[in-house]
Amino acid sequence: MFVGHYKDVPEKNTGFEGVTIRWLVSPKLGAKNFAMRYFVMKKGSEIPIHQHDWEHEIFIVRGEGIITNGKEEFHVKEGNFLYVPPNEPHGYKATGETLEFLCIIPAKKEAIPEEEWA
Image 1 (cartoon, rainbow, N blue to C red):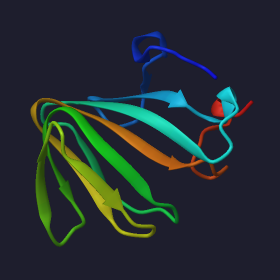
Image 2: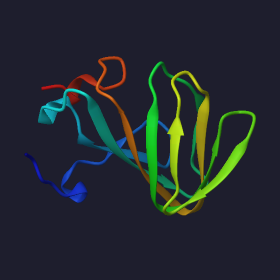
Image 3: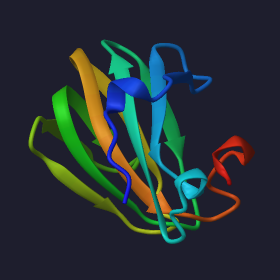
């Protein structure tokens, strides 16, 4: 078992202005099935619409934002959760001071950076 605190995990840039990520659980810790990430998006920041071969499970921890699949927009806030099926387009925009969320993905080589592997 491993117990940690999210603030002890290095915050890394994502390549999108105003968006950071912390890899809380990854294969680096021995996770073989799933990875857990903590995103922080500052007000007005965006992650453009994209898609993957894997699903996402998301829980909004703090703030407000818009999640879109390119056809519909969903206004989300603290306490909302989402399921994004494989290959469904999805994008994010922070509308509150921040949009902070947990995102769970499968532990697949194509989904996780090399430094997060054991």
